[in-house]
Length: 90
Image 1 (tube, helix red, strand yellow):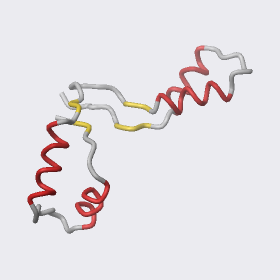
Image 2 (cartoon, one colour):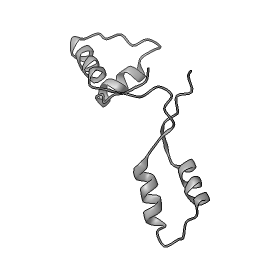
Image 3 (cartoon, helix red, strand yellow):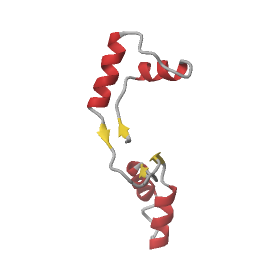
Image 4 (cartoon, helix red, strand yellow):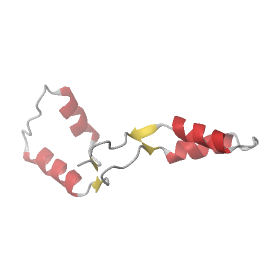
């Protein structure tokens, strides 16, 4: 299962800075992480690559004077910044 969560930056940095296993050494961090998971957004199974639609929209806005063909649209989508890779699991 993949889930998108909003977590406080200091907790994220603390988790990433610690060794291989992060131990919740205080109740506040544990509660914050549990709430982040509870309020998270589960991603559907077998979802495709999630892209930054704002960056894609900005690309077209910045290049609005050009005439686009289907292949241009496909290239822009293929090159859009990836936020989360697609779920290839079966």
